[in-house]
Each structure stands twice: as C-alpha cells, then as structure tokens.
Image (cartoon, rainbow, N blue to C red):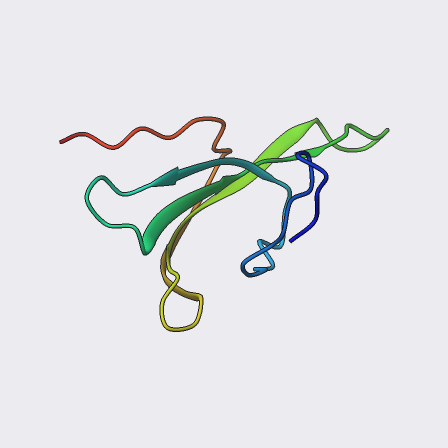
Length: 82
C-alpha cells in the first residue's frame, strides 16, 4: 500500500464514450451506479451549438456491465429518489 495519502487506485475502468459529468451509486446497492455524460458540440459556420448526453445504469459485480442507457440532451446531475 502506498504511503502517499493522495494515492488513488482504480477498481475498474469503463468507457463512457463521452466525458462523464456525474456519478451516483444506487442507495442500498453498492454494485449499481448511474453515470451521466455531457458533450458539447461547438457551433460551426453551418451548424448551431448542441449538447449530447447519456444516462447509463451500470452493475459493477462481478464485472462492470452497462445494464441500460438512455441518450438525452445532456446529463449534468443525478439524484436517486427513494
């Protein structure tokens, strides 16, 4: 174990396709989480600025797997309602 208190070790990696903006574990389930992504498409001479995003439900155990995903305008925050 490293003696550096700021050392972080990754338990797993998952390609979210777009930059991950928010992550929230499901209350009472330490192996389920949601990931929200956000991608800004800059305006060009022929197109307007637009946003893209995805909300994914991921199960971590035994291997990380995306259970469900929804493509949305953008996901900047997540909160479970319980």
